[in-house]
Amino acid sequence: MTCPRCGRPQPPSDAPGAPRPGATRYCVHCGRVLTGVRWVALPPDALRPRDPRRRRRPYAGPPRYATTPRWSLRTWMPAPPPGAEGALPGPAPRSPDEALRRTAGLLGRLARVTTVLAVLAAVAEAWRYGLLVASRSAALSPAPLAFSDAFVTLVGLLAPVAALATGALFLRWLALSREIAATISGTLPARRTWAVVLGSVLPGPNLTMPGAALTEVEHAASGLPADTRPRPSRPVMRWWLAWDASVVLGVAAVLRGLGQSTQAMADAVLLHVLVDVAAAVAAWATVRVVIHLTELLAPELRPAGRESVVAVGREPASDVDEEPGAGSGAAEDGVAACGGRSRGVGADVG
View 1 (cartoon, one colour):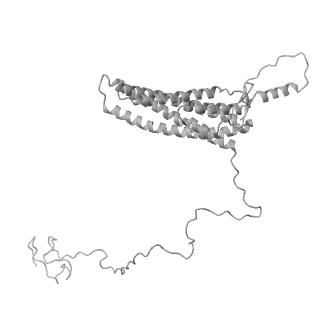
View 2 (cartoon, rainbow, N blue to C red):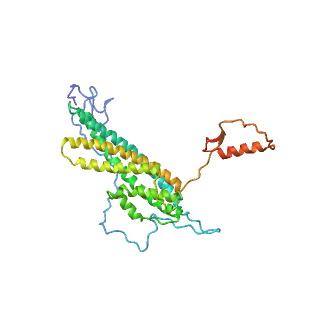
View 3 (cartoon, rainbow, N blue to C red):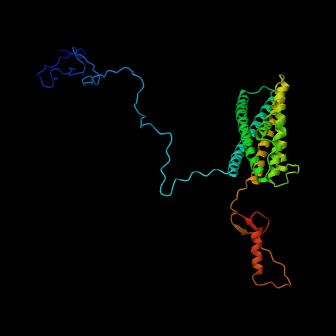
């Protein structure tokens, strides 16, 4: 056989160095595949025997059981059998004071989040108003406008949601505080809970109802006579003023935003800045008034910490001789009585 590439003859099959019979024939000189070679392609598992294919039976419906199966997961665990000492004690019911303190803690954290979001919303609206003023004399680039729109939209969605959640939790805390205040004073609330909640939501009555309810709670928790007229303290009065200002400004911003003119839209943006500032002040005032009234209704004992002497003064000389040890006892009494959070020689540093 002659190679079609190099034209050299191939050695016979019995010659030394020739490929064995039946093997793939290549040219011994240039390595080209010789004519007459047949390539056969086989898959990797073509020579491996396969298992007989099982015939799939038709669907006969869901499985049926004669009894309730025991292999399913349990959604509840049965109570363990009582031991030698009797059944396990159940969880103690939560006291109203603890429920009030827990609600007040959650309300304080949520009100702080609302304060931060309201401040960010005020900054976003102020920036938008600044862009409106700047656009009167020059064209603005699209980047600040896009960022301002995204900023206003984001905080405009988060701040109202946080404010609504804070308001709902505040009404829950107010209902708990009214019950505890009635128990402390031994009286019945002048208004029902549903009337307080409805008056706090409806426009118009919400200017007076929440503040009046807080004043009544403070009056009852302070142990004042029931026949005297309740008067709000400074924390309650600050919250009341901040709440009324935020409500009035919010209504004004909504009404001004209904205008179609350019000046109406600019005034609405400026009013939104004031609304956000008033909402931040009202949220922070909510934190303060909740802490104030919770301490009156359900005070929590806290560790006083360690005491230390911050100053040592000389005792004036006396003509009357004192008994031995009397001065040291008086000094110890003075440190014990004036230490802690008062203005004596002791100070709470722990």
